[in-house]
Every structure is written in structure tokens, then in C-alpha cells.
Length: 168
Length: 276
Image (cartoon, rainbow over all chains, first blue to last red; front, side):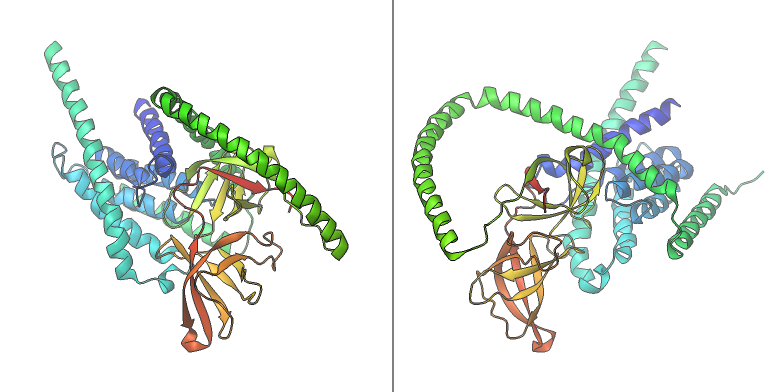
């Protein structure tokens, strides 16, 4: 229950950051996908089920803020949450390089899933140029951001553990 | 002991079922009334938080700026006072021209130029995807806005059209969105060539104007305005400037690159035309 509330709060923060990123940092070329990062981190810590449902809900919210309902992001984020959840339990959570790496590949996968689903896009654009000029940069931004966020989470977790072991 | 966890498979099955059922309802145009209700519910639940955060950050930012730039503000105030005095003088001259203009219009029996009624709005966010260029504004149906209204900047440049609205916020589809099409006309009196201005996904900084006939008179630096042919947008709103003209469809038509007047990354405030 408590975890669910935390996730809801983080989701709201991620959404606000995603919507207002360009308002405060207009010089940035692309907005990182804060919602995707959150989905991957939730999946990474709680598994496939949590990854799937968080992807479904956050994707749905993203679609609502794009003027639709149950669109490409609902589908893609749910699938990606599920895929990211498969990593849970198979790698060391202490390794702070793994979540950024997972986010890098998941970001590329998201764009690969989305581009064919967008009307008219696939026929009007050179996909390789798009990959070089946008997809890689987008994935890189997300990776850097995940590294920062995960480092902060890791540091706080470590502090909490130290504090607990000190009192015990 | 069950070593295989089949949760992912169940989830995939539920998900596929959901997609298929929604696909079928979409294909047969079955209207599910709850969906739009849920959609606006989610939007209405979250959007006040977005505009609230924006308001708090703007006021903190203004507060800090006030302290930081007090000297600059005073100097600017002095400068603006001088400018205002000059503008007053200009205004008197303009008044004279206005009267003269009115008189000449009456003489020639010209139709009066109408100005539109507008509603100012602040940009509180951008669309959460690169593939749909959108802005969120802090005014909605409560302030008299409606779906399909045209949005311009303070100096009148064309921004886009409202395509989703709730009681106190609205989403504006921008002119550089890949699916956005507006009929444009060359401003030059001796040309008036008409074409379709479309968003360009590869580079959202400029648009493409195509469907121009092979002999239409369009040159670099020509101004492109909304044509008003479709009655969807008001006539004569500036869209951009031509930077390049190339033959299209093996010379059967022409295609032009349009440098947009609006700076898509730094739009802070917009005007919504409410009486068109």
C-alpha cells in the first residue's frame, strides 16, 4: 500500500517533469522520457507484474496528455515494463550501471515499437538518419538521467541500511 | 514445485485480449461512452497539479529575479518611460493616419478590416512525446475556449489549433506537428500562389509547403500566410518565410521549405482567437 502511494507520487513527479522540461530548459533538443525511466526502475525493483501495470498506467497517462486514450504509449510502455521486469532477480541490484544500461536498450526498443505505429511517419522519413539523429541521443539522455537517479536512490538506500544496522 | 513463473504469459494474454477488443470496437465504430469519460477524468485529475507546479515555480522565479535584477529593472524602467513618451507621440500621428485611412476606405467603399477577439493563455507544458508537437495552455472551456480554435503568438504568428479541451486547460496541436496541414498563400500581390503547409518530422524547425503548381510564382524570402480557403483558420496569419524552393514530383509541382516565425521551444504565452 505504502509502496503504491510512493509509486503514484513518483509518477506524478515524473509526468510534471516530462511536461515542463522544455518550459524551463528550452535549449535542450529532446526531452528525456521520465515516465519510461520510472517504469523501468519500478520493474527492476518489483518484477514483471509491477513493470507491466506501471507501464500500462503511465503509458495511458502519457496518451491522455497527447489527446488520445489507449494509444501507442499504453501498448509500448506495458510491453517494455514487462520486458524490463524480466531482469529482476537475475542481476545484482547493487551494480549501479545495470539500470542505465537497461534503460538505454529499452529506450531504443520503445522508439522501434512506436515509429511504425505513427501515421505516415515510416514512409516520409529516412529511418537510419532518424536513428542516428534522434533515437540514439534520446536513449543516451535517458541513460544519463537514470544513472543520476539510480545513484541517488542507491545512496539513500545505503544510508538507510547503515543507519538501521547502527541502531540494531 | 513450479519452477516456471507464468505471470508474464497471463499478463500478455490479458493485454492482447484488451488490444483486440479495443481494435474491434474501433474497427466497427462502436462507441464506448466510458472511455472519453475516463480520459477526461484522468486529465482533469492531473492537469491542476501541472498548472499548480508551474504557478509555484514561476512565482519563486519571479521573486528571485526581482531581488537579483533590481538595478537592471530600474534602468529598464527609465528606458521604457522614454520609449513610452516616444510611442505616445507616434500614437498621435497614427491616429491621424487612422482617420485618413477611414476616410479613404469610405471613399473607395472598402470592406472594413476586422480584428479578432482573443484570449491570452500561458504555456504550462509541452506534449510528452517528440512525435506529437503539442503545447498545454492554462485556459479551457471555462474561459470560453472551444475545440478547433486557432492559436497565435502575441505578434500574430500562427501557432496551431486547439484539439483537446477540458474545463481549465487545453492542448494545442502545433503547426510543426507531422500530421498538421494548413493551406498557405504567398503574400506578394503579384503571386498569391497557394499550397499546403505541412509539419516536418525530420526537422521540426521548418515546415514543408507542397502541392504548389509547377508554374506558381514562389521565391526565397516570400512570406507565407494562412489562406483562409478552408474556413478552418482565419485568413492572413503569418506562418513563415520561404528559405528554399525545389521541384517536386519530377517537376510536375514545386515544394518549398518554410522557416517558421514562431520559436517552437520558447513559446511562453499565446493568444487564442475566440470569435472566428
